[in-house]
Image 1 (cartoon, rainbow, N blue to C red):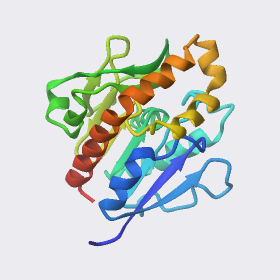
Image 2: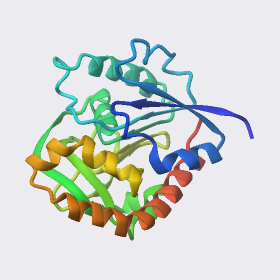
Image 3: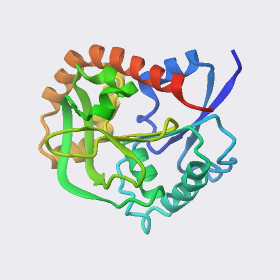
Image 4: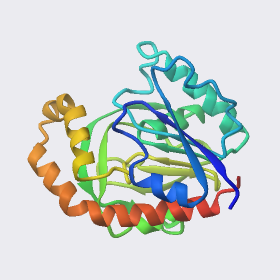
Length: 235
């Protein structure tokens, strides 16, 4: 198997590739994390990696005045997307891809935090996301975006229409978190987002219990989903 490079842009340490890491390795990818806060974290040729994954984080795309690196990430993505290089965005990452494609990103005025199932479009059911059709996925966001021009809506929830989109075979944006690990790893999410959970009046004990109950099914489905997507991208 030819070795390939996947660069993962990480905004907070505990929001990593999670359950996606193993299927990426199985597909022949060497994973290299690039962490916000390192002066040279974007010092790579945007076209060089075989895959770029932009992970989540607790800020808004529209907060670029407070967080100047947002504009740098958007510029990197614009170069990569213009060449249709394989790119995956999760939560904040999906919003950054949407913005790089010219779409508006904004507050939804809703804190959608917790596990719930997805509603699929016909396109979504014919996509790799079909593996998530019978499970509850983890939602953890307060922002949304308009569907980018040329993209297909894949899934929604009753609260938020834009939950995932694709542009062709190589670009996928996931507003939710299929990659999130449960058990001890999930505790880092609960601690890292403690202020947000408190402000949203989320019952932490219930959220932890849901993760324990629903996590194994989500992991199985998420591994199948990302594996199917990796098989169909055009490197």
